Amino acid sequence: MESLISEIKLFTKERDWEKYHSPKNLAIGLNVEASELLEIFLWLSDEESKNLTEKKIQHVREEIGDVFIYLINLAEKLGLDPVECAKQKLERNKMKYPASIVRGSAKKYSEY
Amino acid sequence: MESLISEIKLFTKERDWEKYHSPKNLAIGLNVEASELLEIFLWLSDEESKNLTEKKIQHVREEIGDVFIYLINLAEKLGLDPVECAKQKLERNKMKYPASIVRGSAKKYSEY
Amino acid sequence: MESLISEIKLFTKERDWEKYHSPKNLAIGLNVEASELLEIFLWLSDEESKNLTEKKIQHVREEIGDVFIYLINLAEKLGLDPVECAKQKLERNKMKYPASIVRGSAKKYSEY
Amino acid sequence: MESLISEIKLFTKERDWEKYHSPKNLAIGLNVEASELLEIFLWLSDEESKNLTEKKIQHVREEIGDVFIYLINLAEKLGLDPVECAKQKLERNKMKYPASIVRGSAKKYSEY
Image 1 (cartoon, each protein chain N blue to C red):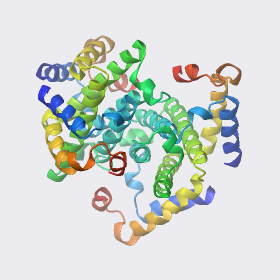
Image 2 (cartoon, rainbow over the protein chains, first blue to last red):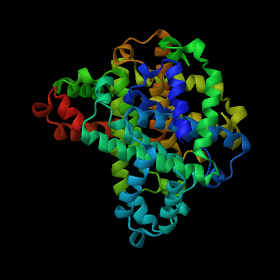
Image 3 (cartoon, each protein chain N blue to C red):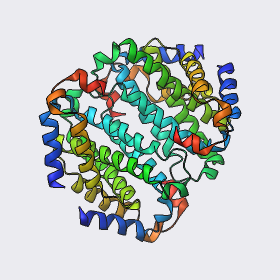
Protein backbone atom coordinates (compact mmCIF):
# COMPACT_ATOMS: atom_id res chain seq x y z
CA MET A 1 0.00 0.00 0.00
CA GLU A 2 2.77 2.45 0.92
CA SER A 3 4.77 1.67 -2.20
CA LEU A 4 1.58 2.07 -4.27
CA ILE A 5 0.98 5.53 -2.82
CA SER A 6 4.58 6.54 -3.55
CA GLU A 7 4.31 5.28 -7.13
CA ILE A 8 1.05 7.16 -7.71
CA LYS A 9 2.57 10.39 -6.42
CA LEU A 10 5.64 9.93 -8.61
CA PHE A 11 3.47 9.18 -11.65
CA THR A 12 1.57 12.45 -11.21
CA LYS A 13 4.69 14.48 -10.46
CA GLU A 14 6.61 13.19 -13.49
CA ARG A 15 3.74 14.32 -15.73
CA ASP A 16 3.34 17.69 -13.96
CA TRP A 17 -0.34 16.94 -13.45
CA GLU A 18 -0.63 18.17 -9.86
CA LYS A 19 -2.07 21.43 -11.18
CA TYR A 20 -5.14 19.65 -12.55
CA HIS A 21 -5.60 17.61 -9.39
CA SER A 22 -7.85 19.81 -7.28
CA PRO A 23 -9.85 17.71 -4.81
CA LYS A 24 -12.97 18.66 -6.78
CA ASN A 25 -11.56 17.31 -10.05
CA LEU A 26 -10.29 14.16 -8.38
CA ALA A 27 -13.75 13.54 -6.90
CA ILE A 28 -15.21 13.89 -10.41
CA GLY A 29 -12.62 11.48 -11.80
CA LEU A 30 -13.43 8.99 -9.05
CA ASN A 31 -17.09 9.09 -10.07
CA VAL A 32 -16.31 8.68 -13.76
CA GLU A 33 -14.23 5.57 -13.04
CA ALA A 34 -16.74 4.14 -10.55
CA SER A 35 -19.35 4.49 -13.27
CA GLU A 36 -17.18 2.71 -15.86
CA LEU A 37 -16.87 -0.10 -13.33
CA LEU A 38 -20.65 -0.18 -12.87
CA GLU A 39 -21.23 -0.26 -16.63
CA ILE A 40 -19.63 -3.71 -16.79
CA PHE A 41 -22.52 -5.06 -14.68
CA LEU A 42 -25.31 -3.05 -16.35
CA TRP A 43 -27.25 -5.77 -18.18
CA LEU A 44 -26.12 -8.71 -16.05
CA SER A 45 -28.35 -10.41 -13.51
CA ASP A 46 -27.10 -10.70 -9.93
CA GLU A 47 -26.17 -14.30 -10.66
CA GLU A 48 -24.30 -13.44 -13.85
CA SER A 49 -22.40 -10.74 -11.97
CA LYS A 50 -20.99 -13.52 -9.74
CA ASN A 51 -19.73 -15.54 -12.71
CA LEU A 52 -17.94 -13.10 -14.95
CA THR A 53 -16.10 -14.15 -18.09
CA GLU A 54 -12.31 -13.84 -17.98
CA LYS A 55 -12.59 -10.85 -20.33
CA LYS A 56 -14.97 -9.05 -18.01
CA ILE A 57 -12.90 -9.92 -14.93
CA GLN A 58 -9.89 -8.33 -16.61
CA HIS A 59 -11.99 -5.24 -17.35
CA VAL A 60 -13.15 -5.13 -13.71
CA ARG A 61 -9.52 -5.38 -12.57
CA GLU A 62 -8.61 -2.30 -14.58
CA GLU A 63 -11.57 -0.26 -13.40
CA ILE A 64 -11.03 -1.20 -9.75
CA GLY A 65 -7.45 -0.06 -10.30
CA ASP A 66 -8.64 3.28 -11.71
CA VAL A 67 -11.10 3.87 -8.87
CA PHE A 68 -8.46 3.06 -6.26
CA ILE A 69 -5.87 5.33 -7.91
CA TYR A 70 -8.29 8.26 -7.84
CA LEU A 71 -9.28 7.48 -4.27
CA ILE A 72 -5.63 7.49 -3.17
CA ASN A 73 -4.93 10.69 -5.13
CA LEU A 74 -7.88 12.44 -3.50
CA ALA A 75 -7.04 11.24 0.00
CA GLU A 76 -3.37 12.21 -0.39
CA LYS A 77 -4.32 15.67 -1.64
CA LEU A 78 -6.34 16.25 1.52
CA GLY A 79 -3.79 14.63 3.84
CA LEU A 80 -6.06 11.70 4.63
CA ASP A 81 -5.29 7.97 4.94
CA PRO A 82 -7.98 5.88 3.19
CA VAL A 83 -7.33 2.88 5.45
CA GLU A 84 -7.86 5.02 8.54
CA CYS A 85 -11.00 6.58 6.99
CA ALA A 86 -12.43 3.12 6.31
CA LYS A 87 -11.61 1.84 9.81
CA GLN A 88 -13.29 4.82 11.45
CA LYS A 89 -16.33 4.51 9.20
CA LEU A 90 -16.60 0.83 9.98
CA GLU A 91 -16.68 1.64 13.70
CA ARG A 92 -19.53 4.09 13.08
CA ASN A 93 -21.38 1.52 11.00
CA LYS A 94 -21.07 -1.02 13.81
CA MET A 95 -22.91 1.34 16.12
CA LYS A 96 -25.43 2.40 13.49
CA TYR A 97 -26.35 -1.12 12.42
CA PRO A 98 -25.97 -3.40 15.45
CA ALA A 99 -25.64 -7.01 14.30
CA SER A 100 -28.22 -8.18 16.82
CA ILE A 101 -30.89 -5.93 15.30
CA VAL A 102 -30.25 -5.90 11.55
CA ARG A 103 -29.06 -9.48 11.02
CA GLY A 104 -30.25 -10.87 7.71
CA SER A 105 -33.12 -8.46 7.42
CA ALA A 106 -33.72 -7.27 3.89
CA LYS A 107 -36.38 -4.91 5.11
CA LYS A 108 -34.09 -3.20 7.58
CA TYR A 109 -31.31 -3.24 5.06
CA SER A 110 -33.32 -1.55 2.35
CA GLU A 111 -34.84 1.02 4.70
CA TYR A 112 -31.60 2.53 5.97
CA MET B 1 -4.91 -3.04 5.09
CA GLU B 2 -5.13 -6.76 5.88
CA SER B 3 -6.78 -6.16 9.23
CA LEU B 4 -9.20 -3.75 7.54
CA ILE B 5 -10.22 -6.39 5.02
CA SER B 6 -10.75 -8.94 7.81
CA GLU B 7 -12.87 -6.49 9.78
CA ILE B 8 -15.03 -5.66 6.75
CA LYS B 9 -15.65 -9.35 6.05
CA LEU B 10 -16.54 -9.96 9.69
CA PHE B 11 -18.87 -6.96 9.72
CA THR B 12 -20.80 -8.31 6.72
CA LYS B 13 -20.86 -11.87 8.03
CA GLU B 14 -22.14 -10.90 11.49
CA ARG B 15 -25.08 -9.13 9.85
CA ASP B 16 -25.75 -11.95 7.36
CA TRP B 17 -25.57 -9.45 4.52
CA GLU B 18 -23.52 -11.57 2.09
CA LYS B 19 -26.74 -12.49 0.31
CA TYR B 20 -27.31 -8.89 -0.76
CA HIS B 21 -23.70 -8.42 -1.82
CA SER B 22 -23.74 -9.48 -5.45
CA PRO B 23 -20.92 -7.81 -7.39
CA LYS B 24 -23.59 -5.85 -9.26
CA ASN B 25 -25.11 -4.44 -6.08
CA LEU B 26 -21.70 -3.64 -4.62
CA ALA B 27 -20.80 -1.74 -7.81
CA ILE B 28 -24.03 0.26 -7.42
CA GLY B 29 -23.24 0.97 -3.78
CA LEU B 30 -19.75 2.13 -4.74
CA ASN B 31 -21.28 4.61 -7.17
CA VAL B 32 -23.79 5.90 -4.65
CA GLU B 33 -21.02 6.57 -2.13
CA ALA B 34 -18.66 8.09 -4.72
CA SER B 35 -21.47 10.46 -5.62
CA GLU B 36 -22.07 11.44 -1.99
CA LEU B 37 -18.36 12.25 -1.84
CA LEU B 38 -18.64 14.36 -5.00
CA GLU B 39 -21.65 16.24 -3.65
CA ILE B 40 -19.46 17.79 -0.95
CA PHE B 41 -17.52 19.61 -3.69
CA LEU B 42 -20.52 20.50 -5.88
CA TRP B 43 -20.69 24.29 -5.48
CA LEU B 44 -17.08 24.85 -4.44
CA SER B 45 -14.47 26.37 -6.71
CA ASP B 46 -11.25 24.42 -7.31
CA GLU B 47 -9.53 26.70 -4.81
CA GLU B 48 -12.22 26.24 -2.18
CA SER B 49 -11.98 22.48 -2.63
CA LYS B 50 -8.35 22.72 -1.49
CA ASN B 51 -9.27 24.58 1.71
CA LEU B 52 -12.15 22.68 3.22
CA THR B 53 -13.67 23.58 6.57
CA GLU B 54 -13.09 21.07 9.36
CA LYS B 55 -16.75 20.07 9.09
CA LYS B 56 -16.41 19.29 5.40
CA ILE B 57 -13.12 17.45 5.92
CA GLN B 58 -14.84 15.22 8.46
CA HIS B 59 -17.61 14.57 5.95
CA VAL B 60 -15.02 13.75 3.26
CA ARG B 61 -13.34 11.32 5.68
CA GLU B 62 -16.57 9.42 6.13
CA GLU B 63 -17.38 9.26 2.43
CA ILE B 64 -13.85 8.16 1.50
CA GLY B 65 -14.32 5.47 4.13
CA ASP B 66 -17.61 4.37 2.55
CA VAL B 67 -16.16 4.29 -0.97
CA PHE B 68 -13.17 2.28 0.19
CA ILE B 69 -15.34 -0.21 2.12
CA TYR B 70 -17.45 -0.87 -0.99
CA LEU B 71 -14.35 -1.15 -3.15
CA ILE B 72 -12.85 -3.74 -0.80
CA ASN B 73 -16.14 -5.64 -0.57
CA LEU B 74 -16.43 -5.77 -4.37
CA ALA B 75 -12.81 -6.80 -4.89
CA GLU B 76 -13.04 -9.49 -2.20
CA LYS B 77 -16.24 -10.88 -3.72
CA LEU B 78 -14.44 -11.34 -7.03
CA GLY B 79 -11.21 -12.63 -5.49
CA LEU B 80 -9.26 -9.52 -6.49
CA ASP B 81 -6.69 -7.48 -4.56
CA PRO B 82 -7.31 -3.74 -5.03
CA VAL B 83 -3.66 -2.89 -4.40
CA GLU B 84 -2.57 -5.30 -7.14
CA CYS B 85 -5.27 -3.94 -9.49
CA ALA B 86 -4.03 -0.38 -8.94
CA LYS B 87 -0.37 -1.35 -9.44
CA GLN B 88 -1.13 -3.10 -12.71
CA LYS B 89 -3.27 -0.20 -13.92
CA LEU B 90 -0.52 2.25 -13.04
CA GLU B 91 1.91 0.27 -15.20
CA ARG B 92 -0.53 0.46 -18.11
CA ASN B 93 -0.99 4.18 -17.56
CA LYS B 94 2.77 4.69 -17.64
CA MET B 95 2.88 3.20 -21.13
CA LYS B 96 -0.28 4.98 -22.28
CA TYR B 97 0.79 8.41 -21.10
CA PRO B 98 4.59 8.61 -21.34
CA ALA B 99 5.88 11.41 -19.12
CA SER B 100 8.09 12.76 -21.88
CA ILE B 101 5.08 13.36 -24.14
CA VAL B 102 2.23 14.43 -21.87
CA ARG B 103 4.14 16.46 -19.27
CA GLY B 104 2.13 19.47 -18.08
CA SER B 105 -0.01 19.55 -21.16
CA ALA B 106 -3.62 20.45 -20.40
CA LYS B 107 -4.54 19.90 -24.01
CA LYS B 108 -3.21 16.36 -24.10
CA TYR B 109 -4.64 15.73 -20.68
CA SER B 110 -8.16 16.77 -21.61
CA GLU B 111 -8.09 14.92 -24.93
CA TYR B 112 -7.47 11.43 -23.53
CA MET C 1 -42.28 21.34 -21.55
CA GLU C 2 -41.90 24.96 -22.61
CA SER C 3 -43.61 26.27 -19.50
CA LEU C 4 -41.41 23.97 -17.40
CA ILE C 5 -38.27 25.42 -18.96
CA SER C 6 -39.51 28.98 -18.35
CA GLU C 7 -40.31 28.16 -14.73
CA ILE C 8 -36.89 26.62 -14.14
CA LYS C 9 -35.14 29.66 -15.59
CA LEU C 10 -37.26 32.00 -13.45
CA PHE C 11 -36.56 29.91 -10.35
CA THR C 12 -32.80 30.23 -10.89
CA LYS C 13 -32.98 33.93 -11.78
CA GLU C 14 -35.07 34.87 -8.73
CA ARG C 15 -32.46 33.28 -6.49
CA ASP C 16 -29.51 34.82 -8.36
CA TRP C 17 -28.01 31.36 -8.78
CA GLU C 18 -26.90 31.69 -12.41
CA LYS C 19 -23.40 32.46 -11.18
CA TYR C 20 -23.04 28.98 -9.68
CA HIS C 21 -24.48 27.28 -12.73
CA SER C 22 -21.44 26.63 -14.87
CA PRO C 23 -22.03 23.69 -17.23
CA LYS C 24 -19.42 21.79 -15.22
CA ASN C 25 -21.26 22.29 -11.93
CA LEU C 26 -24.60 21.43 -13.51
CA ALA C 27 -23.13 18.20 -14.89
CA ILE C 28 -21.94 17.35 -11.36
CA GLY C 29 -25.37 18.13 -9.93
CA LEU C 30 -26.98 15.91 -12.56
CA ASN C 31 -24.77 13.03 -11.47
CA VAL C 32 -25.48 13.57 -7.79
CA GLU C 33 -29.23 13.44 -8.42
CA ALA C 34 -28.99 10.47 -10.81
CA SER C 35 -27.15 8.65 -8.04
CA GLU C 36 -29.80 9.50 -5.44
CA LEU C 37 -32.33 8.02 -7.85
CA LEU C 38 -30.22 4.88 -8.23
CA GLU C 39 -29.86 4.51 -4.47
CA ILE C 40 -33.61 3.82 -4.20
CA PHE C 41 -33.07 0.61 -6.18
CA LEU C 42 -29.79 -0.42 -4.54
CA TRP C 43 -30.86 -3.51 -2.59
CA LEU C 44 -33.94 -4.39 -4.61
CA SER C 45 -34.10 -7.29 -7.04
CA ASP C 46 -35.12 -6.57 -10.63
CA GLU C 47 -38.59 -7.86 -9.79
CA GLU C 48 -38.90 -5.72 -6.67
CA SER C 49 -37.85 -2.68 -8.69
CA LYS C 50 -40.96 -3.21 -10.83
CA ASN C 51 -43.28 -3.24 -7.82
CA LEU C 52 -42.29 -0.29 -5.70
CA THR C 53 -44.15 0.73 -2.57
CA GLU C 54 -46.09 4.00 -2.80
CA LYS C 55 -43.45 5.59 -0.54
CA LYS C 56 -40.64 4.59 -2.87
CA ILE C 57 -42.60 5.67 -5.96
CA GLN C 58 -43.02 9.11 -4.41
CA HIS C 59 -39.27 9.20 -3.75
CA VAL C 60 -38.59 8.16 -7.36
CA ARG C 61 -40.89 10.94 -8.57
CA GLU C 62 -38.87 13.54 -6.70
CA GLU C 63 -35.52 12.25 -7.89
CA ILE C 64 -36.68 12.02 -11.53
CA GLY C 65 -37.80 15.62 -11.09
CA ASP C 66 -34.37 16.63 -9.78
CA VAL C 67 -32.52 14.85 -12.59
CA PHE C 68 -34.76 16.43 -15.22
CA ILE C 69 -34.38 19.93 -13.73
CA TYR C 70 -30.58 19.64 -13.85
CA LEU C 71 -30.71 18.24 -17.38
CA ILE C 72 -32.84 21.18 -18.55
CA ASN C 73 -30.61 23.68 -16.74
CA LEU C 74 -27.50 22.21 -18.37
CA ALA C 75 -29.04 22.06 -21.85
CA GLU C 76 -30.36 25.63 -21.58
CA LYS C 77 -26.96 26.92 -20.43
CA LEU C 78 -25.39 25.47 -23.57
CA GLY C 79 -28.23 26.53 -25.88
CA LEU C 80 -29.32 22.95 -26.49
CA ASP C 81 -32.80 21.41 -26.68
CA PRO C 82 -32.92 18.09 -24.78
CA VAL C 83 -35.78 16.79 -26.92
CA GLU C 84 -33.80 17.46 -30.10
CA CYS C 85 -30.68 15.88 -28.55
CA ALA C 86 -32.65 12.74 -27.70
CA LYS C 87 -34.24 12.52 -31.16
CA GLN C 88 -30.87 12.80 -32.88
CA LYS C 89 -29.34 10.24 -30.55
CA LEU C 90 -32.20 7.86 -31.18
CA GLU C 91 -31.56 8.10 -34.93
CA ARG C 92 -27.91 7.23 -34.35
CA ASN C 93 -28.90 4.32 -32.12
CA LYS C 94 -31.19 2.98 -34.83
CA MET C 95 -28.24 2.76 -37.18
CA LYS C 96 -25.88 1.44 -34.54
CA TYR C 97 -28.20 -1.31 -33.34
CA PRO C 98 -30.35 -2.44 -36.28
CA ALA C 99 -33.45 -4.20 -34.99
CA SER C 100 -32.97 -7.09 -37.42
CA ILE C 101 -29.57 -7.90 -35.93
CA VAL C 102 -29.83 -7.22 -32.21
CA ARG C 103 -33.44 -8.28 -31.54
CA GLY C 104 -33.81 -9.91 -28.15
CA SER C 105 -30.18 -10.85 -27.91
CA ALA C 106 -28.79 -10.50 -24.43
CA LYS C 107 -25.35 -11.33 -25.67
CA LYS C 108 -25.33 -8.60 -28.26
CA TYR C 109 -26.92 -6.24 -25.79
CA SER C 110 -24.32 -6.78 -23.09
CA GLU C 111 -21.39 -6.63 -25.50
CA TYR C 112 -22.06 -3.14 -26.86
CA MET D 1 -42.04 15.39 -26.39
CA GLU D 2 -44.93 13.01 -27.02
CA SER D 3 -43.55 11.87 -30.36
CA LEU D 4 -40.15 11.36 -28.71
CA ILE D 5 -41.68 9.10 -26.07
CA SER D 6 -43.51 7.08 -28.75
CA GLU D 7 -40.33 6.68 -30.77
CA ILE D 8 -38.34 5.54 -27.73
CA LYS D 9 -40.97 2.93 -26.88
CA LEU D 10 -41.03 1.69 -30.47
CA PHE D 11 -37.22 1.53 -30.57
CA THR D 12 -37.17 -0.70 -27.48
CA LYS D 13 -40.07 -2.85 -28.66
CA GLU D 14 -38.61 -3.47 -32.12
CA ARG D 15 -35.44 -4.78 -30.49
CA ASP D 16 -37.28 -6.85 -27.88
CA TRP D 17 -35.31 -5.15 -25.15
CA GLU D 18 -38.16 -4.60 -22.68
CA LYS D 19 -37.03 -7.70 -20.82
CA TYR D 20 -33.72 -6.06 -19.87
CA HIS D 21 -35.40 -2.80 -18.89
CA SER D 22 -36.17 -3.29 -15.23
CA PRO D 23 -36.39 0.05 -13.43
CA LYS D 24 -33.23 -0.94 -11.57
CA ASN D 25 -31.26 -1.49 -14.78
CA LEU D 26 -32.59 1.70 -16.32
CA ALA D 27 -31.51 3.66 -13.24
CA ILE D 28 -28.02 2.16 -13.62
CA GLY D 29 -27.96 3.08 -17.33
CA LEU D 30 -29.02 6.63 -16.48
CA ASN D 31 -26.07 6.91 -14.11
CA VAL D 32 -23.61 5.51 -16.62
CA GLU D 33 -24.70 8.05 -19.23
CA ALA D 34 -24.79 10.95 -16.75
CA SER D 35 -21.22 10.05 -15.89
CA GLU D 36 -20.13 10.00 -19.53
CA LEU D 37 -21.62 13.48 -19.80
CA LEU D 38 -19.68 14.60 -16.72
CA GLU D 39 -16.44 13.17 -18.08
CA ILE D 40 -16.49 15.76 -20.89
CA PHE D 41 -16.08 18.48 -18.26
CA LEU D 42 -13.57 16.64 -16.05
CA TRP D 43 -10.41 18.68 -16.60
CA LEU D 44 -12.05 21.91 -17.73
CA SER D 45 -12.26 25.00 -15.56
CA ASP D 46 -15.70 26.52 -14.96
CA GLU D 47 -14.90 29.15 -17.58
CA GLU D 48 -13.76 26.58 -20.13
CA SER D 49 -16.95 24.62 -19.55
CA LYS D 50 -18.89 27.68 -20.77
CA ASN D 51 -16.90 27.87 -24.02
CA LEU D 52 -16.81 24.37 -25.39
CA THR D 53 -15.27 23.52 -28.74
CA GLU D 54 -17.71 22.43 -31.46
CA LYS D 55 -16.40 18.87 -31.06
CA LYS D 56 -17.16 18.84 -27.35
CA ILE D 57 -20.58 20.45 -27.87
CA GLN D 58 -21.45 17.65 -30.27
CA HIS D 59 -20.31 15.12 -27.67
CA VAL D 60 -22.43 16.87 -25.02
CA ARG D 61 -25.44 16.75 -27.36
CA GLU D 62 -25.13 12.98 -27.67
CA GLU D 63 -24.71 12.39 -23.96
CA ILE D 64 -27.63 14.68 -23.07
CA GLY D 65 -29.61 12.62 -25.57
CA ASP D 66 -28.57 9.38 -23.89
CA VAL D 67 -29.39 10.65 -20.39
CA PHE D 68 -32.80 11.88 -21.54
CA ILE D 69 -33.62 8.61 -23.33
CA TYR D 70 -32.87 6.62 -20.15
CA LEU D 71 -34.84 9.08 -18.04
CA ILE D 72 -37.87 8.72 -20.32
CA ASN D 73 -37.53 4.92 -20.40
CA LEU D 74 -37.40 4.78 -16.60
CA ALA D 75 -40.32 7.15 -16.11
CA GLU D 76 -42.44 5.30 -18.69
CA LYS D 77 -41.69 1.96 -17.05
CA LEU D 78 -43.03 3.28 -13.76
CA GLY D 79 -45.98 5.11 -15.31
CA LEU D 80 -44.56 8.53 -14.48
CA ASP D 81 -44.43 11.73 -16.53
CA PRO D 82 -41.00 13.40 -16.21
CA VAL D 83 -42.42 16.85 -16.94
CA GLU D 84 -44.96 16.46 -14.15
CA CYS D 85 -42.25 15.13 -11.80
CA ALA D 86 -40.09 18.17 -12.52
CA LYS D 87 -42.97 20.63 -12.05
CA GLN D 88 -43.89 19.12 -8.70
CA LYS D 89 -40.27 19.09 -7.57
CA LEU D 90 -39.87 22.71 -8.59
CA GLU D 91 -42.85 23.64 -6.41
CA ARG D 92 -41.23 21.87 -3.47
CA ASN D 93 -37.94 23.63 -4.15
CA LYS D 94 -39.70 27.00 -4.15
CA MET D 95 -40.91 26.36 -0.62
CA LYS D 96 -37.61 24.85 0.52
CA TYR D 97 -35.46 27.69 -0.82
CA PRO D 98 -37.51 30.90 -0.68
CA ALA D 99 -36.00 33.47 -3.04
CA SER D 100 -36.13 36.17 -0.38
CA ILE D 101 -33.86 34.16 1.93
CA VAL D 102 -31.38 32.37 -0.31
CA ARG D 103 -30.88 34.98 -3.05
CA GLY D 104 -27.30 35.00 -4.30
CA SER D 105 -25.93 33.45 -1.17
CA ALA D 106 -23.13 31.02 -1.86
CA LYS D 107 -23.01 30.08 1.77
CA LYS D 108 -26.66 29.13 1.93
CA TYR D 109 -26.38 27.46 -1.43
CA SER D 110 -23.52 25.20 -0.43
CA GLU D 111 -25.00 24.35 2.95
CA TYR D 112 -28.25 22.83 1.71
